Length: 69
Image (cartoon, rainbow, N blue to C red; front, side, top):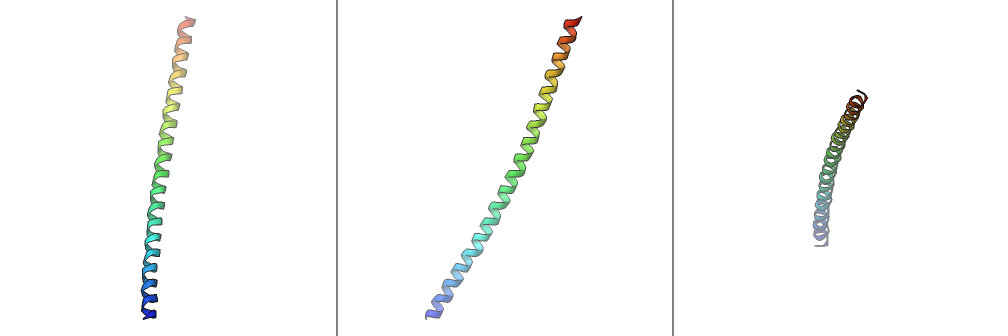
């Protein structure tokens, strides 16, 4: 009887280990996806900032050219 209880406990605990490993893998995949999306968002924001700075420089140059005339 003791062997049966021990075997049953080992099977139950073994199943928990597999479930925990599966959960950890799922969480890791989600974190990787979040990181990739964060990098994409960061790159888009950098491009938008660069465009805004370029437009500001162009406006300043146009204003300077208009003032020199």
